[in-house]
Image 1 (spheres, rainbow, N blue to C red):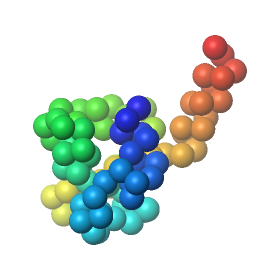
Image 2: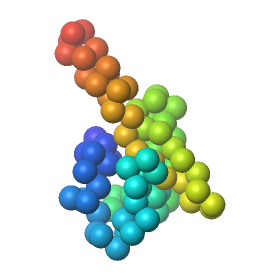
Image 3: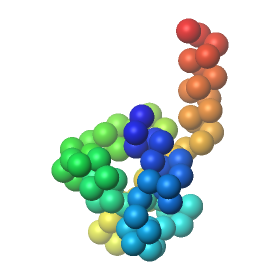
Amino acid sequence: MNILEWLKDPFAHFPAEELADYTPELGVCVSDIARKAGMSIPTVSVYLKTMSSANILTATRKDQWTYYKRNEQSIQQLAKHIQDSL
């Protein structure tokens, strides 16, 4: 949940210097997310890949780095499903 919140408004949650190459189309680098979470890159990568497999996040490779952003449409569908079903 924290990662989804951070990615909703990256400039409110990550230092500006970490977002120097940020674009809404690209997202936030795994290493920046891991640093914010206080966890290792491999651990955070597993969480991010899981959310990407569930279509809640989208991943983009740029050189050797992977960037993640929210898939807003899927998040809204999930929220509606939870609201309607629970």
